[in-house]
Length: 92
Ligand SMILES: [Zn+2]
Image (cartoon, protein in one colour):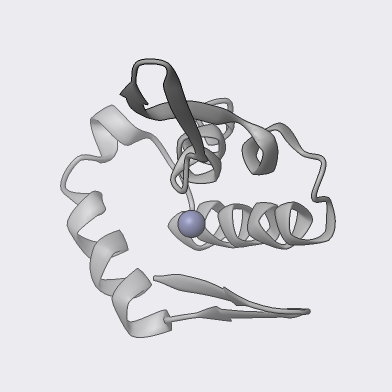
């Protein structure tokens, strides 16, 4: 529904957001009066912040991806930013 394009562009897909908001309307009693567009925009802004700050946790966290004794290989978690962002947005 949104895309951050380096270095400073954010695209929001209005048709998709409107369709999703219409669907969300059925669950307004559970979801409350949230604006999906604001959530998607905040999500993409976080991607921009991530892109500009290589030292952010989401850019530096490593997990063990291969272990052949005595060798170990660590790799970045490509979805760490996604997990972090959605966790932060729960507070909205
Ligand atoms: Zn994302």
